Length: 149
Image 1: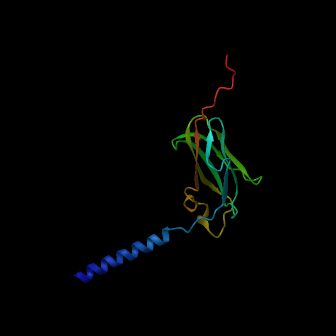
Image 2: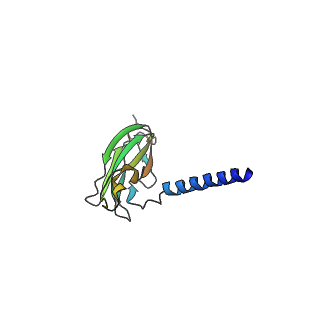
Image 3: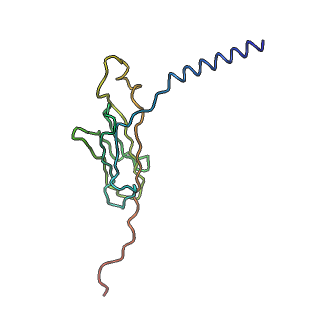
């Protein structure tokens, strides 16, 4: 009886491992490169918070959309990347002290290989590509530059 239980558990573990192995994907090649306007990721009030986006070391195989959120909650701006000129920008003015989050997601396959019918399916796309974060801080106290009376 113990032998049957052990074999049953072993079979379950082997089946679970096989299903897990098929469900896992390999790493996604870097298709986009992001260069922040400020390398520190910190901006003053009123400054433009942004990133220049260029194709990465691997030619992009997806079209991408982006969403900018305040404190990762309130959607401030959305758009789609257009890399036809070789680069694009994602930017917004930091109008209050906040954390600015940008999520990049694929929304369409650029080149579908006919030999892989599932390539165009949403399951074949990476679920989330990139998240970027920047901080907008209050302006530093600056002394009054008006002459005293």
